[in-house]
Image (cartoon, rainbow, N blue to C red; front, side):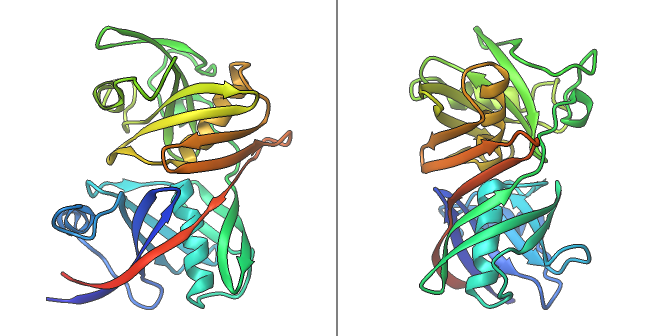
Length: 280
């Protein structure tokens, strides 16, 4: 049995187990990741994130969902990666570059009392071409409020990728909407060859939104950073909001700006919960 140091971190409730793999090539099986993520028999998390060396950036974020499947990107996760590498002395720069499945992203760390509290991430441009999201579609036009019938619900979805696929759906009240039943069906719908994350969203006021997320490979989570970015883009494309929005999620709030240049900028908190040792 091997002992492995870990750090539990969260970004507005989106929690992961973080493992420093910068000095040794630590690899875990699907079953081990599932066990670590299990909230009854393991640490409990939305997944596991390894921080690895990178040939093209300062560090690489290697991310796995709680079911053991790999994921390209996590907005809340990458903020915590920024906090991890600074707080634990892996870097002294407040603008680290992180390699992800979406490419290399640059972070800006807000340091207070020698610890990172907030992180701003340039998430890059949203991907709106169906084939690249990916969505199986009969043309290459943007998918904006396309009809989707699920379990008797007549819905409309807007497809956006922020390095991972999202289907954004505006509903009257996400708090009472059957997110688990409908979200799980949409995640595995034949339209989405790599499955999809699903956001259920309502407008609270001017440039102010509320979001619940069904995450691919994890189920409903308290927050989703890439999902919030996708929601910001979708709310603008559908004429509901401007380019700068506050999005409230079950775990807290994120601030998203879809700049005129096309990049999506996300700002939010990152926190360390506790540290420990795994026996695997």
